[in-house]
Image (tube, rainbow, N blue to C red; front, top):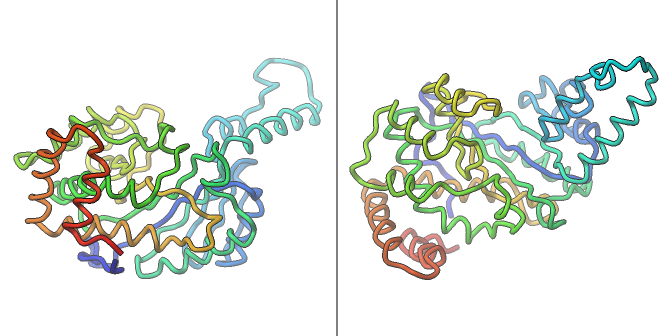
Length: 331
């Protein structure tokens, strides 16, 4: 596989950017923040006990947090005061916090949200991956409970509706191959975090007559996918197009409007010395290449719909093999 993009620049004419969100365990929040500062400089800011920020590094701002909205909310709440109890013993409050910490560290990953960098500089972010590995960070494969992922935030070349539809089609066509190639951990497959798109929506988008307006694209997506738990989360981009509509559909779910495909499929393989962020980026580039190959994308979309309707057993494996042959994806 090559390491290039068919469309290297964004709407403003600058190199497209990519960022990563890495989930893992085995380190404390302050340890992870210190590693980032040691590598890239900046200032460590403790927002609360479940979140640290590393500001103004040479690459931008990093966030280090326990990925749990409830715990972060509790971190800023006076629990005893809410109960109207006249107790002012700090050690009691600390004990409650300690219990929450132990609970969190048993089931909740630490997450580092990295700033986007030009795609040609991914090796800079990979320095962090290497250092976390040295410190014995643990990823998906270290426990059956670890449904941890690596999320890849990819800046699109533009926000045209036709462009977004092309990316969805390319992803749907390549999804079975990606599942086989990435060997997605069972704990993540049975979790709700990367639920695949409903069949009806996939078929609608792959139909060659599907040419939605911006409003229809957003409405269709929200009707079938009123959640961020998709392997290719489109909510950040769609919120740029129709912010109020997306916010209403997600209710209290966190979603920052921004120009990025939020690709959530890869495992967090931080414990594997042979793994790097570049591995996942190279796989993503197969989607990029297919988006600009009009004839192949059209043919594969039609063939997918035909084969999906006729194959009774093991469609995913058979289709993954078909795509690998037609697109010459074998290494």
